[in-house]
Length: 309
Image 1 (cartoon, one colour):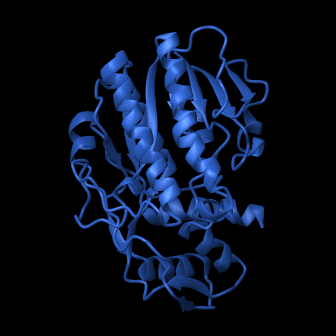
Image 2: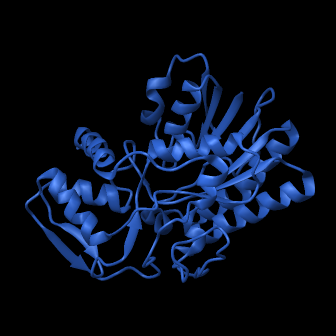
Image 3: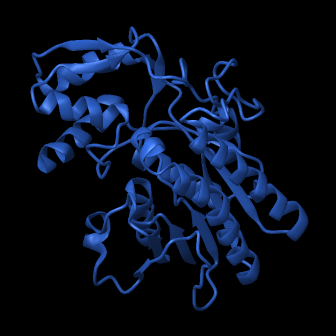
């Protein structure tokens, strides 16, 4: 197939491009580099099956020819971005998704939206199934991302119902691996960066809040499987193995040999207390579940960040 990947120079997007090329597809990566980097796709320069398009998807999208699929990943997604570029996040979730869907409609392409577990907000249901509608603060600092993705899901389903666009929605839970930004504010690069610098790891609250961590190659496998499946309702993709942030910090210190320990700071507003996917639908519909063990994935991530320091 010929596939457009918006956000193709980002952390997940660049890994997705690698996988699609390995599977024999032609790939167009589109990115305005607000959070992505050409460093993430530099190794693809000269590949005749790959092309990079510098473009902001909140502007009209033109792609020559007829792509078979549009995989819409474009969006800043890190906590620091919620304060730094909140309006851009809202625009890419609304205008950007509208434009990407319009392209899919015009070209007769199937469409995959990269949504997020953040649509569940600070969940009152645990673990989170796709049937849960969420607990989101629409005017909090995280609301710009949460509500942008919730709108993106709504307009995606509207294009499917009204225009017959062949759509898919993947809800991505915490994902980590090489090519994450070291300063992106998420827990994995935060902890690894502090540990490699020999600093104490900063845990917010008492560390009892939980997360589940999926290695990027597992996530990308789930995305590709969903693109090829005949499923229009949202599907969770993430690692269901849950652990506390405190335990995760201790694991990072152990793997890096960091003796500096842990310090505690107040919990940010609206920070989810629990996060764990119910992946029953992914197992049933896609035959998917994560394969990479946490310590194996972290070893790869640590090596990557070490090379960047």
